[in-house]
Image: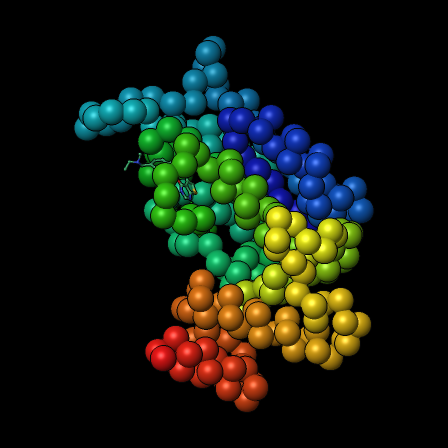
Amino acid sequence: MQIRVLTIFPDLFESFLASTLVGKAVVAGLLEIELVDVRTFATDRHRTVDDEPYGGGGGMVMKAEPWIAAVGASSSEGAHRALLSPQGCRLDEAKVRELAGHASLVLLCGRYEGVDERVRELVVDEELSIGDYVLSGGEVPAMVVIEAVSRQIPGVVGLADSVENDSFRRGVLDFPHYTRPREIEGHSVPDVLLSGDHQAIALWRRREALRATWEKRPDLLEGAELDEDDRAFLAELGRRSRA
Ligand code: 9D3
């Protein structure tokens, strides 16, 4: 897979790429990432990338031409072009899998009050947001997209020393984790985890995962894959809470 990032702050990506699983995927040849500095596509003497908004108002708007030129120069035929923007479709695990299905992605990171609308009209296939809160630009959202999409590439998660957490695929949150020491300020590791009884541990983990989901994200249970035991346990939680 190939991802091109169009930004006026390519430096923001350096330590992200050097220090994370994404960087390992690049080194392993599973992923190719290209950073494109949009400012190099500005043609005037001062390499201007922003200008005042038509119609007035506060803030600056990113000029269309450098973006259109940057996409034209760096977009391989058939690449999927996504603009990170607060007006975008909210990113979730289903959207991440869809993005990972493209052989080539181009991520456009806007800044300032926004990007001239002609960029969206002419060279963008879709707009993506990472959630309903205000950030300063599309760079951090692009890192979110890159990290989530990379994990979908076969072999990438195996490069980490952790195993994949596919909780969102099944609609249930993760179970609680513990490591040494056994006790901290009166808070002990549950005995079952020290029992060596793998079946009992698996049952405990499943139930704690269900409990966490029920308490923290009950909305996820709607789409969760649940068996008869799961449903019985959730029904019991419900009865206990009403008692
Ligand atoms: C306070 C400015 N807002 C006026 C209503 C508009 C606005 C413009 C530009 C808000 C944020 C931004 C910059 N953000 C992004 O480019 C962005 C973003 C985000 O802010 N939140 C979640 N996902 C994304 S993706 C890109």
